[in-house]
Structure formats: structure tokens, C-alpha cells
Amino acid sequence: MPHTTQAIAEMVGGKLFGSGDLTISALAEIDHAKAGELTFIGSAQYAKKWAGSSASAALIGQDIELEPGEGKVLIKVDDADLAMATVLEAYAPPVPAPPKGVHPSALIAETATLGKNCRIGPNCVLKPGVQIGNDVTLHAGVTIYDDTTIGSGCELWTNAVVRERCIVGDRTVLHAGAVIGADGFGYRVDTSSGAPKVVKIPQIGVVIIGSDCEIGANTTIDRAKFDATVLGDHCKLDNLVQIGHNCKIGNMVLIAGCVGVAGSSTIGDGTLIGGKSMIKDHVHIGAGCQIAGGSAVINDMPDGEAWAGYPAGPIKTKFREEMAVRKLPDMMKKVSKVLKDL
Image (cartoon, rainbow, N blue to C red):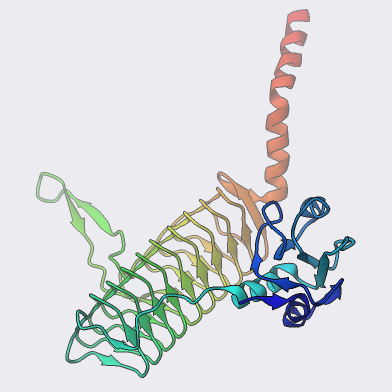
């Protein structure tokens, strides 16, 4: 649905520079935006492109100095990223969802209970003892195993699986192919009977996920060997993340794609983990930490620190080490020359 620039400015609490009567029909990146479209300028790098852009309007941060230009509009806000999120929500097309009620092909155990206003899509399976809260949406092919609890307002996308006895809090989203509560990776080699064999250690714990979380596509959170693997409230996990058994993850932890967290690790509130990072088992990461993408954390990390590298360490130290390594070829040439002269 189109909105005027005045309506958008009011929507985000921004200050309007230019006409408030321009109609904005869509959103686009600054390089591709056309007349009638709104773009987003979050840094000086993109501010340079504004003069040559065909966009009719742009959201910009308070720290960016620009003139709107002829026939164009700027909307200045305190936080351009948050403002853009608000506008995207206003322009987002309806999310496809099954109709209210239970699809005829769904298999619902007699002892499973459903809250009010639920949407259960085709070929969903709810095993005995499952409890589903109010306003829950299960897209096609979701499977929820015995005695699992799904809180109110949750949305589980196609082929998501929640294994037995696990708990998912309110308003949490599981994207397509997410698997909650698969067995943890627990094995030991037994040589007592002569020929060695690999013995599987039973994983009899559960997974507990808090409220307002979002679990990316094909992400896996393993059940505990005993007790619980725990994910706090407001956590956001990207696609293809692996959380090992017995991990304890605090509130508002953000984990980018392809991260692996090995078993029995703990991660404090508000920590940010960059993509393709690895966390060793039994490691403690404090609250408010930042881990750069591609890092390997093998030691405990104090609260509030920023680490990078392979293996990871304090980011300033790692940058100095990197600069020293880059100087080694020239240093070796100088050493070789000195040795030759001697």
C-alpha cells in the first residue's frame, strides 16, 4: 500500500526535508531505486550516491549531511536502521499462512491440545501430549513430538521439527527445516570386549527456548544429555547454526549464519557472534561480548570484550599480530641481506 512522504515521516518520527505530498509506492536500494520509491542511506558511503539516484525519497541518519535536491525528499531520523525496519513492515506484503483451523491432512493425536485461533497446515503431525498455545501457526509438514509445549503466538514454518518434551516460549519463530531437540553428539569408544566399538550415550534431556526468539532455516539445537539445552528470551539465530547439547545461552544473543557452538558452552546476555565462527566445548563467553566472523573461541572470554582470529583473542592484539605477520616478508629480505653482507 503506497504512503505519502509525510505519512512515512510521521510513521518513523522523522524530520521531513522537502514535500510531504510525494507518494511512495515501493522501497529499493539506492543503486536501483526509481522515481516514486524510497531508499535508505545509513552511511557516508551511500550518501555519495544520493545526487545520482532516481529515488524520490531517502531515510537518513542524523549524522549524515545532505540536501534533498529538486523534487526529492529526505527524512532524517535518529536511527536509520530502526526506521527502515518500521517502513519495511508497513510495505511488507501479507505473509502466506494456512487458514484458521486444522487442515484435513494433519494428524493430531487425541491427547494433543490446541489453543484458540490456531492455524494447522497440511500434513502437520502432533504427537500425544503436545500442547499448543493460542494463535499458533504451523505451516505444511511441521512435526511436533510427544509432550512438547509450544507457546502462544508462535509460527513454525515448513518441515520444522520439535522433538519430544521440548519447550518453546511465546511468539517464537522457527523457520523452515529447523530441528529442535535432536540427539546431542555423545559417543565413547569401548574397547572392553576386544574389538573397539563406538557406544552412543543416551541424550535424555530437553531443549528450552525462550519467548520472542527467531531460529533460522536449517538451524539445529540439540537436546541435552541430561537437564536442558537453554536459549533465553529475544535470541536471534541465523540459518545453519548448530547449538550443541547442554549449552546455556542467555537473553538477546544474536548469532549469524554457519556458527557452531559445541556442547556445554555458556554464552552471556547480549553477546553478538559473527558468521562462520566456532565455539569450543565447555567454554564460557561473558555478557555483552562481540566475536568477529570466522573466529575460533577456545578459551573463556570475559564480559564485554571483542575478540577475533583463529584462535580468537582480544581484537586489538589480533590486529597487531596481523600487521606484524604482513611485515614478515620485508623483514626476511632485510635479514637475508644482512646475513649475506656478514
